[in-house]
Length: 299
Length: 270
Image 1 (spheres, rainbow over the protein chains, first blue to last red):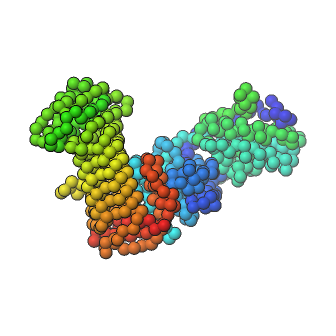
Image 2: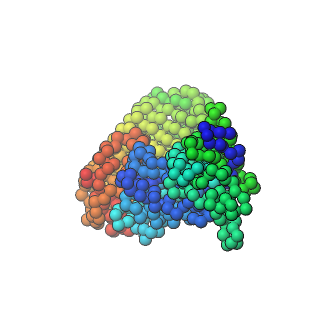
Image 3: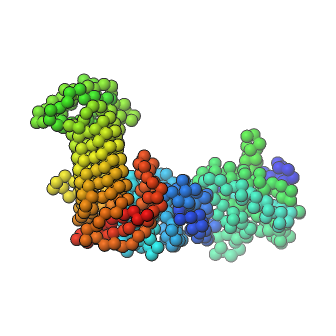
């Protein structure tokens, strides 16, 4: 299948069952909400190396937040509610509570609740105070600047991680431009792209010749190893590959994000668009690229 | 189901049975036999009220009409449904309430929502003394839920309050939050004398300055985010909240130092 001159490989992205939480971080202005967002999503690209994956989902206007201030929503993914609870305590405690003027609220309705503010409150050393509004308990933690307001508990819901597309281009510049366009198109509600500005150059395969490593470079997609690796997945004219990884609250959101990404990336200079999988043996979700493109055409 | 007061009582009626819980599933004739007290005399609900319809199972709405200023204990121990009162109502409205919502289009007498633990009471007019309070001799008042008074309230709002929210759109009289254990009182007007006397924990927020007791200490003038959160919540519930209150600074006074000194009075400072 082709979109313009770009071939859409008949393969599938293999995605996994994960869990996710949503933080709504507000601040005095967008600058400080964004600062907290950058900090809390730092070093959260891959659950393998970072214990979680996180990214900014959306910027929120003042009338979309619980306290009427500008904010952002952040999604954080992990493999269990317990693990997500630990990551939230670490990251909110170190990256949001420390950031001037911020407050942090649970952004999911329902799901399994994990205690976050109820643990961070001890930073208040006995001067913390709780507020109960309906069924929602908030903690006010006194800090040097004023108070940090945070929900006691955050919801964790089932989610999908590891959706992906691979963009195979003729040169680095055109591949990067296509990946940038794709990443821009793929940012929809309910998904994040956890790598730097959404794009990853060091896609991995499971395992390594070094037994300590759980993952290593995806040699089949490295142009510089075309003749050295046991096999290559690259056509002759491909000199650069970039990947976009997608985590979403639902499979539908991941699929829609991928569909938009394929459409945006397909262009002159992009030879193929493919996806990473493990033969269908590891992930619970198989998202076929052709189905996404055909679905869009049918729509 | 609709109830209309057809005979004005000479002395107060005690009508705990006027609540969706008690009336659910009853026919008009069955409801008319429910016992109420006219003074010390036990009578049927039908002796004073004309009853029509049934309580619908999905929403549990009961509407009450007439001059109910002498009808006490309406919505007592109510746990679900919606009670709509067209006009003014007597004392002890929603006492020991656990859930559901009561809406009064007129005024309410004393003891609104005393010792309630859940649900919401909305009074469009004014309320009397002891809103959300503990009864005399009891250690704790409101233990949860929300009381929204759009008008004014008199003395001892939130006496012994332990949890929940009381919001007053106008002014309150003396001893607002007296002996408060925790919870939040928001007064969009002025507090009367001696607010927070004997309070242990909890927050009293007011939009006009009032002299605090000597056992309260000024901390600082700050912009606590939780006030914004509460004011937005109240705005969503239909209270008229000025933007300057949402974005404003508040003087924080901590007290009562005769107790734990962990309570606070926050007064709008512009």
